[in-house]
Length: 459
Image 1 (cartoon, rainbow, N blue to C red):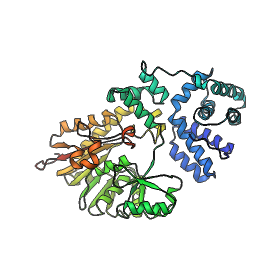
Image 2: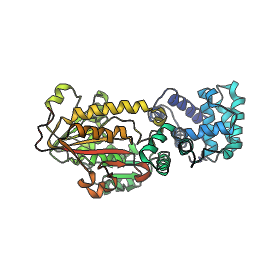
Image 3: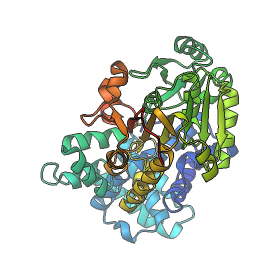
Image 4: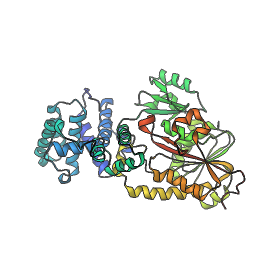
């Protein structure tokens, strides 16, 4: 976190406390809560920055913060009311990650107890102990206890660290991944090829005060240096870009979508990838965007109007519609619902919610989806399965199981499609994989499969 020297009202810290209570106890999503807050309440730019930094900083580093609280004071986390614990977390975060003075932190601790006066003395003593002892805390041994060390110091649940150690095999790589997950991700935007070229958009944004640089791998991306009010730019109002991570852009490029094709986006959601598909197809042919949520499809249609994506059609899938579409699509793109383990740097709250049971249930659902929608692929057509997770059960295992069942499909390594773009992302097994600590993108998985020309399709 940055040390913000600009005056920030105590109101901002009280809001941080309320938000943390809602996120951790109420399991609310921080981005939605922050969006609602900033619409209805007035804060300075410095206060907004402080609120966002503290919320995401505490969620990212919650494991280390809690360890320091327990080992630098006499407090036991299990015995502390959540609201009181979150006050102590805010002050610990100040002590560890900012240059705030001891007096300022203690004053903040007292002020945050405005509705908890009976705990004021306890909070003050605990925070004083943390400030005094925070640099003396001994963390688990990195060599002897790598799971405990990475889990505590880099703030990831132990079961996730253990899982990744089994899949990546190298403690150093797992540590690097966890470190990357705790960094603030860049603001990456997708240039709308229907509206403008990347160089011209870069110039346009620069004139509006938003400097940027081209993404390293995607030919359609820009990394923008400033986030605040990006959606108030003329470029956005004119549909020249959407916010989309570079990994997400690359996953969409995996489809190889071309003008004139019928491309089914089977799990379209709010439609970011549908819009890009339309751009790749020069709005020629059809992008059939499917989702079970009418609200998301309505939002997609609004975005399509702004972007000029005139070839997008939306549909709520049902048995009759899917039957009618059998063996007709040039490409079926399945951006499957998943655990989101590849986007922890954007959604740090999710790592504390996720369970092993969630992954098992999602894997079963993903297997159903790929079976169902594979029947829409026509002979010679493509099936692209993708997730924003780095869990084998949801990725390689799903695809391998499908290919064992449906041997008329065969895997196409991404590097064979476009070695210049996908060469660095193709695994030894022939899949696409992007990783935060390797590529500075979100973590994505992708598999491209082609249906044999002589296949009669799914019977």
